[in-house]
Image (tube, rainbow, N blue to C red; front, side):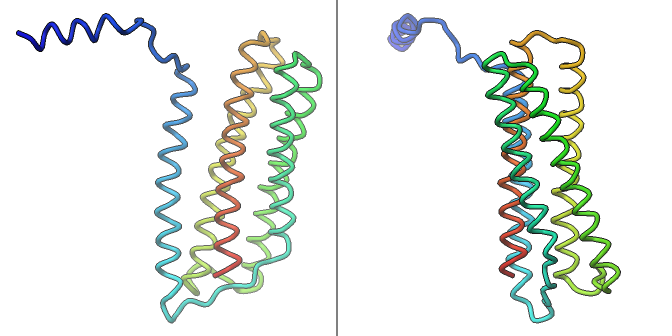
Length: 196
């Protein structure tokens, strides 16, 4: 069996060290991949639907620009929090975490405000496919951000319980990656809404 001898030689060349990836990072990668595919399907559906004759895009409220700025500041604060925890500056990390959460809550409240303005102006989801997609895309993004705020809340609890810095680094890193992902998703959605 020459193939067996060849396999033994190949096995002996391997040093036995496997690629070590923490389960939490693998889980986040899988989650982000699944979410990306799911959200990409909505982007494709939006792009296909906007060329139909009954598509009447709504005017984008100026508040969406403010909300975009809040999300950018939130992502930047999460990044600063990660830098701080890696340098073992726990107080600075905590301050930036609170700042990131505050900006994120501001974004969610801003989105609710936008929805209220549109509804009061008569832009109902059932009135036009463009309206329905606006509510769908902003609602999906808001739901994912609320999920991120749950993880953020758990991170705040960990900090309050005095979890060791090594474990905090991994948790803050995971939250930061997720925040950056949500920022990219929002930029794509906002770009679609602006240029439809």
